[in-house]
Image (cartoon, rainbow, N blue to C red):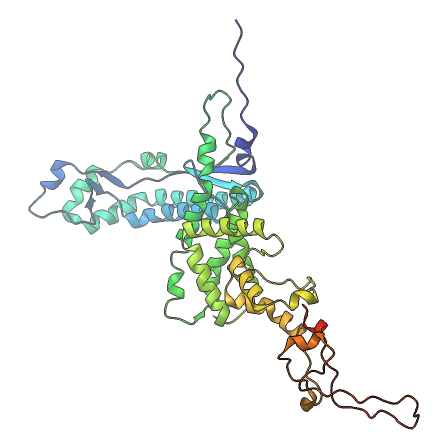
Length: 402
């Protein structure tokens, strides 16, 4: 009997997963709660306080004593999300950052284990303090207390680093579908990171250096994950270009403040980031020599032909309509051109030629109105020397062709 061959997965399916590591946070934290029983509510006329019961459970230990474990978990999550993104219940981190992330995650996990040992050593004291805070309900609390060894078994802290790929035994691969949504997840996470940035702009005309930390963290995250979605890189370049031009100290004001406002609105909207990245890439395909990723501008190394600098205002307007850039960018880009094309004024303003009203006069032998013809000189009379004339030479037709 021939065994059917298992088809090999398509190469593109493993492209993203080959470059990433999946991290799983395996933190099991004792809740310090027990199920609320009917007899717990028959212990007098008074209703138990909200600090003691909630949602069908009663607290048998002070929640403040357990907060350290939840705080360590959130710290590990922040480390993974700084350069990674959520994926399949874990966190997808680029391989280039995986080793450093694992070191920091293991350090925080070690601190969580040390905190657990400290809590277990003082377990009885925590229970006694909780019962003393609610003496009327002490019998109900004591009845639900677990031995310290039972609590120890419910405290577990570790971080796993795994490689994911589609199993060869699976006929229908769904991993590729999940990977297609990674870009949208990244943009959504950045939107949450930028949630509080708007408060730093509203009603103000300057931005403090402290707020720049959030912009840099967003740029670092997007930069690390730019390979996961083609729309991310243009957003990264927009952020990097702005951050590179900011002063090292002092407040951010003026035009840089307004640019920061625009970027705040950009990174605060996941859908806007996706459209921005896709739009700039489309622009780069249409005009690869002019699309700079953020705005169109004349690069310093480009040389401008003299004929191009003499273009009409209509041509400039058409160029603006194609590029879609704002007036500020266009004025900055065209400033060097207007300087080069300026005509130097004559030394004597009174000798400047009057404008030609009739172009037909340029194509016949008649003198041009408003201009004198130099007198003829008799070549047979050597004593006659033509006097210098301050009248400029007639303007030829060639001067009016572009």
